[in-house]
Image (cartoon, rainbow, N blue to C red):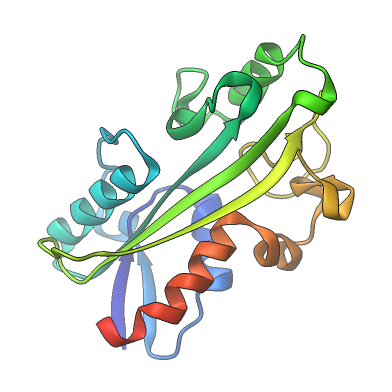
Length: 198
């Protein structure tokens, strides 16, 4: 069985990847199993950060790697928090604080203008020096509510209203979310393209 390291310590992402990513003879192993710390995300785009993370994990394990960088873009905030979504309130991965800051920043914005989208860039690298990494992207349109609703998912899911299902991302079942989400879209694209690279 071929091992691929997932360049993330985010447990929510890990669960989503494992639910979607079930390929015969491939074992997805989180970087935490190798005691690898997260890479410094110094890129200026989702794609750049995903490449940095994938290269870091591959370099330290000697394995092919898979990384994503994702976040939410809010139109009324000129695309913020964007690549800084996980640390919007200052502390990396503090979901409640990030959500509170987003609500505060949008306090005076009327509902029709609270349009937003989740973005995801996924990168697969065959090795740390891979000159042509496979890059796939997904985007999921919605709106930011004025209060949290729902208990599923993680991050901004309780604030992200999905018009097609008339509920938040945090109210969707795991299966439905994976069908619709930015990460699900990017992963399905990846799975179509990457088998020849292995």
